[in-house]
Amino acid sequence: MASAVKTPAAAAVDFASAIRTIPDYPKPGILFRDITTLLADPATFRAAVDALVEPYKDLKVDLVAGIEARGFILGGAQAHQLACGFVPIRKKGKLPHETVRIAYSLEYGIDEMEMHRDAVKPGDRVLLTDDLIATGGTAEGAVKLLRELGAEIVGASFVIDLPDLGGRSRLEALGVEVQTLVAFSGH
Ligand code: AMP
Image (cartoon, rainbow, N blue to C red):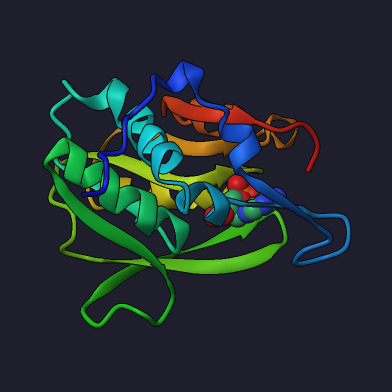
């Protein structure tokens, strides 16, 4: 019989070492922080999800909203832990029903994201999630979309913060509390 995966306290987990760094991907000068190595490690993945939900356990979260695509992996697990629903925030053209859309800037380009118009009801308490916050352009777009639908944003959670790019401050300026597990300096 396989032994159960134990969850170490988040403080004892070296999340940074579980993340692989790929230089010059997808563009020269970018240090791509690849969380697939963290996700593939049972104890670290579990510890990351546990740490990401901890501050929100008693905050009556109705929905976790995950940003495509790595936010789906984390967000689904977080929603399960919080016993709440999950809604996807997707790149344009992927969702089948009526959508709301917003353009946003990201560290390496500009894009548009969408949600189903009926995915969130006014007053729903929503936790936003993604793997990484860099400039905060993606998360800011998501916050605006969610608020357009009447969501109350309980917080925004990310495994990785790139503080030199200012995303955390950008979200905090919108009145959104930010939680991250590990920070890397530079891009
Ligand atoms: P930003 O909008 O600048 O905060 O960029 C955040 C989004 O782009 C997230 O969805 C990340 O997955 C992705 N991203 C930006 N920079 C990186 C990076 N250095 N490594 C991995 N993913 C990144």
